[in-house]
Amino acid sequence: MEFLDRLILYPSQEHLVLIRVLVVLLFALHFSFLASYLGGASFSLLFFLRNWREENGNDWHVARELGTSPLFRINVVLLLGILPLFTQFLFYIQVYHETDFRVFAYGRIVLLLALIGFALLQQYSSRLKKDATPGVATWLTGAAGIGLLVVAVFLYVNVEALALFPEKWPFVHRIVPVFVVENVLPRFLLITSLSFAFASGFYLFLYFGWEKRSAEQREWNYLRKILSFAGTLFSLVTPLFLVWHFYTAPPFALSAGAFLFGAATVFLFFVVAILFYNLYQQGKGLSTGRPAWLFVSMLMVVIAVGVHAEGLRDRASREHQKLLALKAAEEHARIAEIREERLAAAQKVDGETIFNQVCATCHRFDSRLVGPPLQEVLPRYRGKEAELISFILSPTRKNPDYPPMPNPGLKKFEAGAVVEYLMKQIP
Image (cartoon, one colour):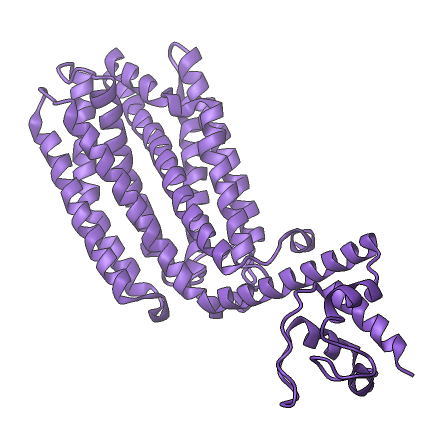
């Protein structure tokens, strides 16, 4: 973790706002892919089993279609499955920089499990394409891949839930923080239920909205019924888990706005449930327009859930964010000072030249001009050169007998060169 500490800069307040927006967008992108990917694999295994039981070649055809969809291409998995997850953890490492929240340690385990799970499901998809009649080993490979990805999601949810309870971070020393806080189970059930609902909507749109498959065929009509029924069921159940998630969140992470946004999200879930139910009731004469509206509505729900979760994390870590913003300002000032010093060394600034060009208009050493005689003022700053530099950079009125000194507009290294020249002129 030490090498990360050297690489990470303290994020400013504007940077933290940008990170929150990017995290919501990444969540929507990654969740949409992962839910559809796992849903496709799960429905594929379901039709795989159904084909074994009834020895129906049509069911096997649907299983192959679901398990070899464009989502299972390796470049899609890397771009939408692995990269967004890795990027989210990088953002969290920056947001929780210099805390006891071990995001990097937890992220390594989640990423490892996710990589293995994706590899197994890619192997399952490859066997579906190549083998005419895949056997038990193929089915077990797919089941193992789904299992590992579900475990990775569960561990990720544990990390998300722990982020809401900063007071517990110093006391969590497990390799993986499983069930450390009570918010874990409702969050996991919320994500799982939403995943099934989204996957149902995605494949209804893909096959009956985009590719316009005919629901007249028995196996495709069965898929339509399974997807629309599952979508209706999980769209009605998910709001219960969302309310439970609210109930178990820490009070300081909640607000009136959060409750209003949560209520709007619940209403949106019921709209989606009605759309699913209409598709279930529609029968074989399925309209191609309705799956598209359903898919758009599901995307809105996913974004709403992402905004809700990020809002809770933002309010829970607000004190730490203020500290990061202060340290960012200090770090930026330190870097600016270093740059000025290097610029001064490169330019070889001459204090006497700057004094004659800028300061001599108002100041003389031995007589009053606009300002007081410098030979009377400078001895007071012997050994206090830094104080004199600060005064030159930001002048204030110190003697009522003289007008206030205007800001000369010098850089710090230029003011330092002038002070060095002046202090050499006094005995």
